[in-house]
Image (cartoon, rainbow, N blue to C red; front, side):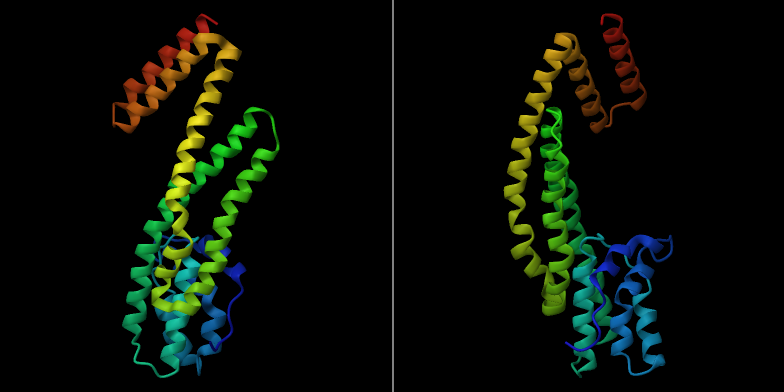
Length: 241
């Protein structure tokens, strides 16, 4: 593949120029600018590509390198003479942004991050400093795999990068979800035992009220009444301590 490939470090600055108009468009253009500059024949062609790739871009930042790699793949094939229009490139970028953001948000924010934090918190209960190390190791294993490996997958597979990511990055999704559920159960049991040994049944009862309050908020119960109930439970707990 021709052109100068930008350093992967540029993608870590994707959100440094976030704004209300183009969201992360400027950051995306900054990330791929060296490649476009090497690919363009003249300043006019570079301005044309800049006009397309410095516009609106909104995607999960961890999945953005995969999208950038796919864009570079398409731009290179277009330069080589394949029948690839600018509209097709923009359409692919938009479609990949939506699809990979939906998968990436769920994988990283709903499954991986809570799982890694729970494991770290279990060790923190027993004052072990290995907890943060385990959290960083678990999270960055998939985080860096997505940024660096996804970048390479996009360069190689183009528009079909989502198939490669589904085969590699997301294949562990169900396994991690099961591990997260198990870790949450262990964490809940440990918190219950620690609360019982520290403050007896009163502290446990207060914790149950706190969990009930969070559940009510998730059910869109009145925030005011939930806060008042939590305040009353806290006052009762402190008055009988």
